[in-house]
Length: 115
Image (cartoon, rainbow, N blue to C red; front, side, top):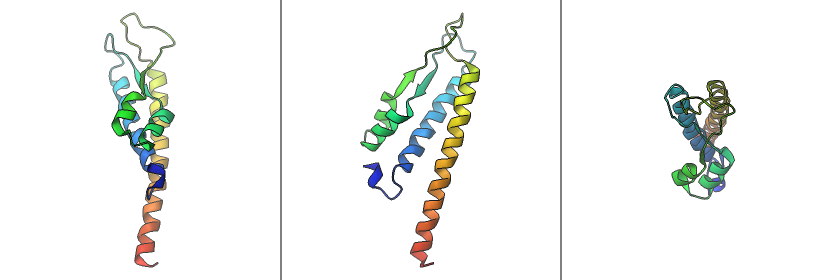
């Protein structure tokens, strides 16, 4: 279980946030592709799956199609403003998790050196 590891839930959270960043970037990159269907990862569901050792399969199962607020004429469901906001929020959360992990690694390194 991820919570029992050296880094607790944060290692799993970093993995899910990384995968979500890729999905959101793909949505942004395909904003003008006719028929493209925007997707997103349900963070809570994916994190629970990763914690229960489902790994990438759990993340895939937590990836859902986004329901657009306004339908595009060409069938594309990407709403660029929504995607950019979600990407920016996820990036901040990713950086926060990474900073916590770096602090934890620093603590462990100091403990091993006897400082």
